[in-house]
Image (tube, rainbow, N blue to C red; front, side, top):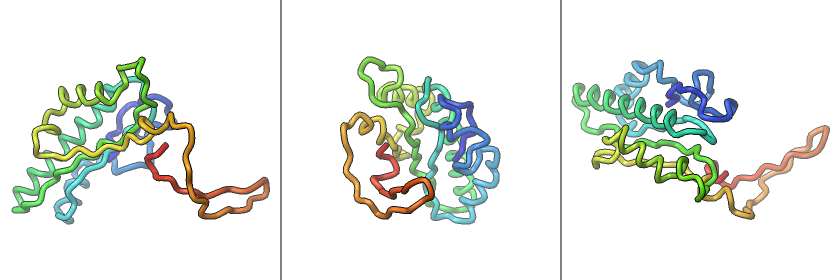
Length: 168
């Protein structure tokens, strides 16, 4: 889900802005709810909000919107007699590298902000998934990956590797 929030840091890395190619836009709320009614096997929402935020508030605002959407989807599913409801919220990643000297952008600060703004995430009805790969692994000194292919280009070669979408 694209929460269509303000840029959270570097504008070109803000995946939750209105112009982003990522996710179904929150402005299509009715279309999203309709998709869940048509495909009752859907049980999760994944939010894209941004990378390298300068503050947590926009991210938390985006998660609050997705939480409200999940609750609306669950009410609609219940009205239609479905028993399988949205139970997982993937809050994405986006936090900058872990920095012990800056507690304002830590996972702990993020969790506290989410508990304040989205207490439903932590009441036992939902599972929270995260993608904090870069936050934890970005300061690693090296990574090993298998080269899948080398593609020649006029000015050199592109190497295609895969080490996990959330690793960096």
